[in-house]
Image 1 (spheres, rainbow, N blue to C red):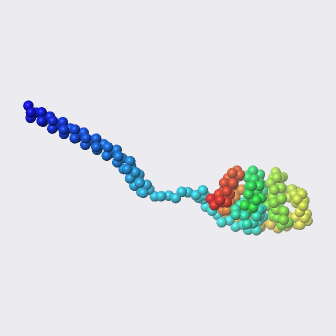
Image 2: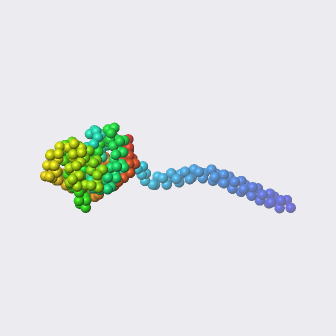
Image 3: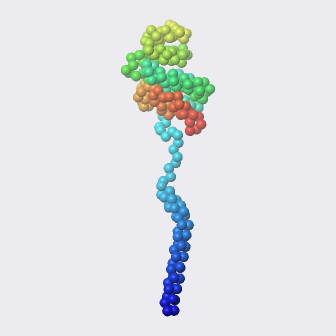
Length: 235
């Protein structure tokens, strides 16, 4: 009888120690889980190549020549916009009215941006080449931007009669202007602009290069503002 009691006693003690062992194992396991997860996460991160955070602008930055075209703004401005435009293009007119004029007010007038106009007369616009030549004749007399604005304001009436009329309205020397128009003095100049634009990837109008960053189409003012601000602050 005593032997049977001792056997049960030993069995009970064995179960108690087993229970304690399991309990201790669970505590140790629970304590080790966060540390194990941290090690696994660290190993996983070390296996993944560390990619630098992208900058705001990742596209190509073009080196666009300024030529001797008309410049609006401070020649030492930190941001330069070079545009390729067609006076008969409705999208150019829209960009001028809705975006470029606002850029002038906010950035060009205070000296932070300068704007350079280059001709890109599209072949399917019959007056685009002649309008561009007329604006170059106005440039010769120091009134390019006045003439440029007037051409866009009268886009629906482009033609030889309008070109003479606008020259008179803004006070150009009538005889000099007519001679410049009649001899097509700047025909090759305009064609050279078009050829150069095609060479640097211009395929349509308007196309803008803001410190070499390409912006195509009648983009809203905010698109110009974002790039300009990035350039001014070092992006």
